[in-house]
Image 1 (cartoon, one colour):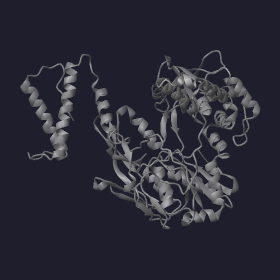
Image 2: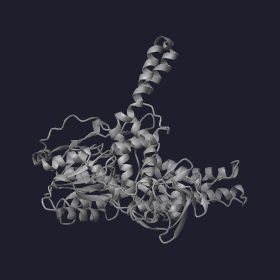
Image 3: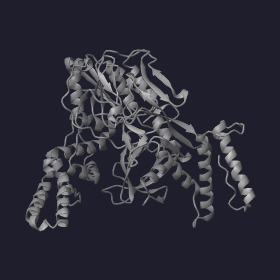
Image 4: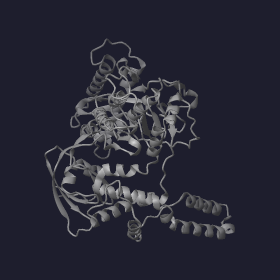
Length: 595
């Protein structure tokens, strides 16, 4: 703890020097002696640097408080400094203030007190995106598209997404009053909701697909994830003629390490090494084994992954691959081989710290980014090819460390067109689904509902007076050509051809609604179904045209293909370049935790 003199007391120089020296001695005791008094010996270089820089920080804060033209906010300044310091290490080492503790607990438990709704910001107001099924929001008929005007009598205009989220959350059993404006209604509507404990399921859907294939969608690794997977698998296992199971962890950013180990244990024998952690401190070195009897060691298994499958997802998929227990299908995973622990600090604050790297059964670490070094531009780079080593799976297949888990069977990303993304990002698909829900009280079941020509034409009418302009890569390149040719005095010579090409591109863009109709219909279908059947319905509806699921079903039903992959005899086609995902942190609690 750093001690500061009272701002309203004037100290003479001797008193100030004594206070500063006392603080330094205290800091040296803490950092060099673990809180116990140590003999006055010359500190090692690392310890001296810590003490020196803490003393400098203390002086900076004191001088700012004394001399800065306006009053400072010490708490905000300290948090800014701490955040910047930790950010220079890696994205996963974070400072958690007392007010942020509940959000971090939610990541661990999947539970929080609130009304149970997704929200987003559109203009000056926050909008309900989707109520959770069975939540207070859904039971009180809050609907997607409802605009929050007031909360407990206070205007919500201009409040940010995070501000509104913080107010909506609260202790279970307490009430909150919302005034909303529903599209299509002339007058605002007032709703009084009682907050409840909201539990976000690790498995939003599981069930049987065609060809007697089971499917489990696993979206997180919070507490009880393993028991929920086991329960879902046992239910599928009861079906006669079960030919295989798909575990879908695409988009799953990770969670608790022990949950990933226990999920692996469902499919492999007791006593098998799943993951080993290695850190600077001896107590961070540990090998996690399967401790229970497996449920089924023979049922064919496929794990679906993508570029957002990270950390605990990579332990699960990596262990299944290294032990040759199943086939991995999809895109290369994120590549996070780092373990975090949450360490308590003073004043009820906490710090999530990277304490170790983890290694899956073959012995490889899949960490993609080298956070110990920066390039000349100050950016962390990937592990160089020269340092990437080869390892062997249980059956002798060659796998490589670094850069995530490479799937056994690669499938391409589904990339949406510019027109589809423009309609989605500008909430036009969202707003049309809101109108559709208002005009249709029911629709067919999620696995039967389709976007008919009539619905699509209604959508075209809906957006006919809306703005959704976008630029294609070709337009950007054409604009660059114009700018560069003007600078070099060539534009007049090519102006006629330029104008003709620009006009042709504009005409082609007008046909994009027809050209990419199937993509737009897919997004419309997902959004409309969510109005009636929520997250579960969206997953069910997506399965029929999911290319990864189709590849997985084919792999599980073709035993020759399945066995050839695990034997190392499968020769995949040349895969397209992988895309690196945006880094999004998900953090957990006191147990060993992974992104």
